[in-house]
Image 1 (cartoon, rainbow, N blue to C red):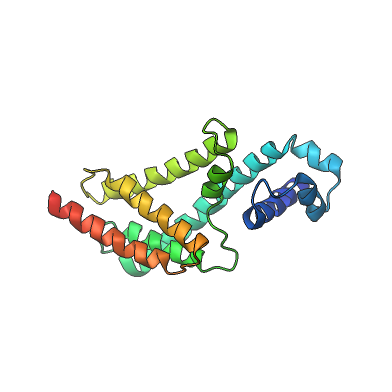
Image 2 (spheres, rainbow, N blue to C red):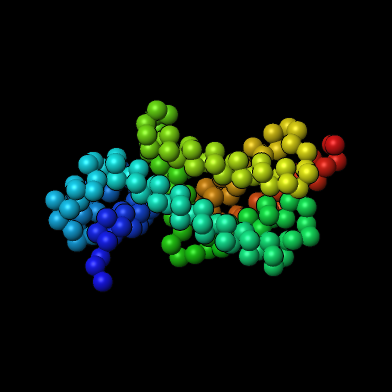
Amino acid sequence: MAVDKRQLVLETALKLFSENGFHATGIDKVQSESKVSKTTMYKYFKSKDDLILEVLKMRHEQFDGWMSERIDFHYAESFSTVPAGKLFALFEALHEWFNCETFCGCNFINACAEFTDDDHPVHKLSTEHKLNFAGFIKEVLEESSIPLEGNLALQICIVIDGAIVCAHTTCQKQAAKVGQKMLKVLLDNQCNMS
């Protein structure tokens, strides 16, 4: 079976960017680790920024698919009778992610930290990923008939991103479990206010 060289480069680049950072990983390193020629590399990716954008698009698809599957699993397993149970299931999925061997933080948070110009395509794509995720949170709240006053969806996103950063920067592998408790407080407060 023929190897999809473009996919091989993307998977190799994702691994290297996740482990070492975007700026610290040279395109020559990606090319040599992928074991493809420079001609092949530049056939698919005209520049390093082009490669980074394609890697992040791939990661977005991979992560969304994995997260959806794990949320559905935990929801069915433990939270189907809980108001906003999909959000509690999301924190269980985060806990799994934080405790896997390949966890290196969020590629999109890391990309925004390295590409700080809001107008840079990498920053814009990373922002789009985060806004997409925030949209999911808002949808779950609406489906659960939980009032959205007081920026509840934003507060939950802040808890999620805080848990991700905490798990990555300080190796607090229980950060998602703590975040799940914070979610309960936020939801209880919201319901008491309405």
